[in-house]
Amino acid sequence: MNISQALAEPELKGLDMESPERIKIHAKILSRKKMMRNVFHEFYKTCISLDHKYFGEVSGQRVELGAGVSLFKHYYPEVKITDIKPAGHLDAVIDAQKMDFPDASLRSLFGLNFFHHLPDPNLFFQEFLRVVRPGGGCVLIEPYYGPMAGFMYKRLFATETFDKRDMQWESSARGAMLGANQALSHNIFIRDRKKFERLYPDIEIVLAKPMTNYLQYLISGGLNFKSLCPDALTWLVVLGEKLIYPVARLLALHYVIVLRRKASNHIKGKPEKVSGISRG
Image 1 (cartoon, one colour):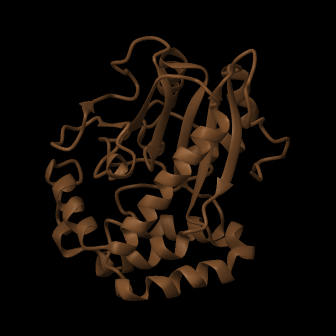
Image 2 (image 1 turned 45 degrees about the horizontal axis):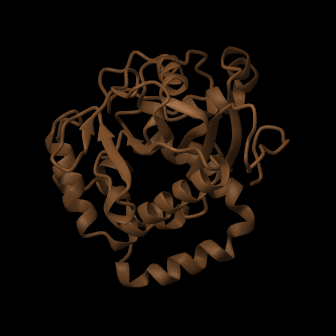
Image 3 (image 1 turned 30 degrees about the vertical axis):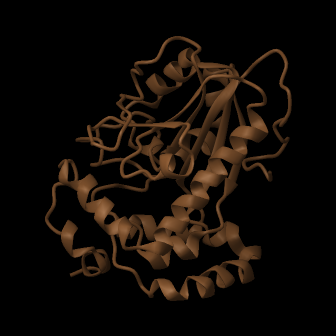
């Protein structure tokens, strides 16, 4: 038995990850994990904060894609939560590669651990340009590509890969949750940034920055693994994150990417001139 099997949540063992039962079980797991709920809340706050910073006064709906067991609407009721698979808590069932939204009708899109599950990200970028208004954009939180992330993701998820050398953006994934490359965002936005900018000149990458709540995520076990400490010690884990902040780029497990549809005039939040990663 390997480490991922030993630490797996008992309810998920043997479960087909494409099964509708996955969402129900994840909801049950999340309900008992305060530390993981804190992580999600920080993700949502980050999305909304960056939305305000970079998308100015653009009007339109805010939409979460690939929401899964999302609590986004609990904290921010104005956000429409959607997923490609039906579930009772969703506002709509939406395929991010063929969105059922009118042209130029949205202010922003949010995706948490969603982007790397796309079979063809080019279709998503085309839809992004169609449904998002000029000056609006997308906030993605994805698996990071630093040393700790690369080590962990290659070993913990048997149903997904982490391949920074895969030259193909498209995948032959067997389903929404199976066969995804968790390094996809790195491959497109970091490694192949010049290619992306050439193919999509109307989409600008305005931020790519590591998240710092990796200890909470790791110790909570996320949605798929057992917690490594009781929720009562959350304060101690948060303190640990603050103490090791200077090495966040080495230890981070997630990072946030902000994409913006270009407009002739941006109200605020100019992209930062950096190489590889923005320091916003």
